[in-house]
Length: 308
Picture 1 (tube, one colour):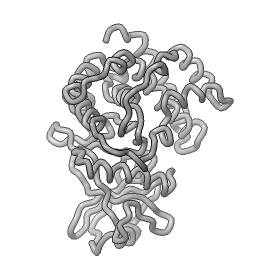
Picture 2: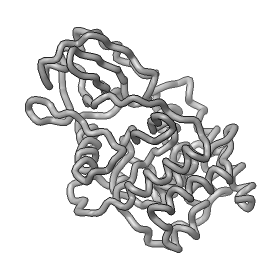
Picture 3: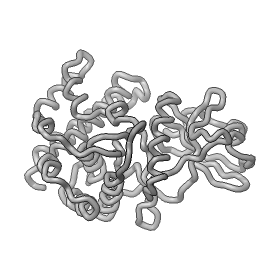
Picture 4: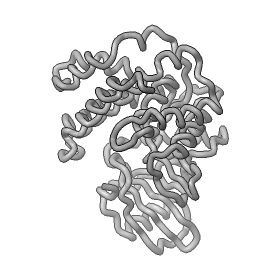
């Protein structure tokens, strides 16, 4: 679902007045997003994507926008740059609503394919090559669920029994013996968090899990959700993805050694995200058991890992 808040044109006009004097002509709810309500807004002068936050506080949204502003300053070609209000704020607050206004980009989320994986791989590698001072930008562990968090979580009382059992059968401590390279990571780069226009990547979306973190963890998450064929991770799609990624950023030896383990950590991380949102939380009760799908995918991947 993408329109939990059920905005009306009058609501959008009030929000838009914080930015400019455009007149809203049409409003369309988009079936995108879990943490946000999303709307396509057309005015007499512009075309916008309006996001209303559903489960993050204003500070959390602001920290995400700081990363997008940073990427814009670094000329990263695939991220959206938020519009700023007349008060030069990247996050608006209007009554009970708060969120972000973006330019609207044409494109559609792609299906998994060799070309899709190749382009997403290149885009993630270009993100990982961004250098500079990251002072003030949030650490990914403040918003995402990295391996160190998962390792601690399995000892908590709230941890589901099947998640704990899957953890012990899927991973070991080999990941923690390395000191991996860090920088800006996306944290949730599945193919459905991208837009393609005429078969080419035009935008990387939803930097909600982004921050300063380990590249290999980011890569594992992206591979686990982008290289899918009939619900299973495809060895051929992984090859296409990595061909694109390494055309920009060749993997260091320590990342190559742990790559497939990182895919499993990625599946565990997203599974735990679903547990916290849907099983323990109440964001969407119909998805309370959806985390099990990712555990099953991880089991199958480990069984066939030698085929890759």
